[in-house]
Image 1 (cartoon, rainbow, N blue to C red):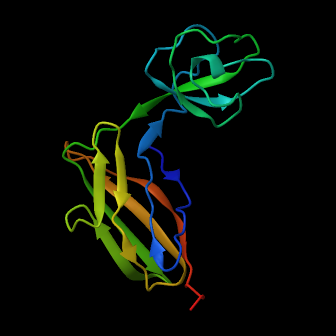
Image 2 (cartoon, rainbow, N blue to C red; image 1 turned 45 degrees about the vertical axis):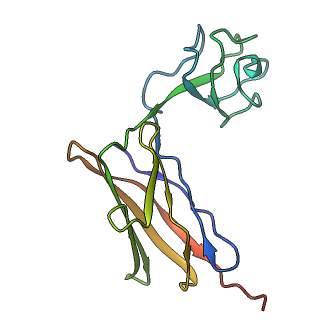
Image 3 (cartoon, helix red, strand yellow; image 1 turned 90 degrees about the horizontal axis):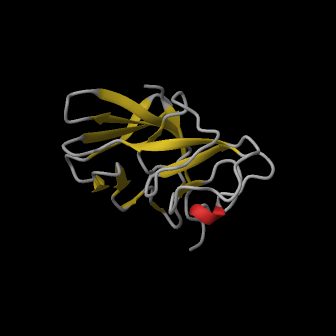
Length: 170
């Protein structure tokens, strides 16, 4: 599975919160360019083209990058060639998650589900978040997030840089 790269958002006043949604968008899978959708399933508008209309079935907007839950099966117009991809959630039931944060190649902090610094909030949808914490780490750090699924498969799905800003207001 390919690594997905995300930039984790920074917090305010020394507190840093992140809540990535752990989802696999199967961009290498079948691209959908016409037909009907499965009501209740989530879709990504991978590439929006001109006149297609998906707002009647749950999309907030008709543009590239929009993720929506289909509230129906038939878009108003889908003749322009827009490409949709069905989102496949990865279940976190029985999974463990570990995130390590490095600065200048030195380990600065480790977060895990085992020490309750990472919390799985919806196993079925694959949603987790970092518990609230006060950061004394400042500047740019590198991180990755490793997930061990219940079947023993270990993968790194998230990596990137995380900028911790120092609160300057006294």
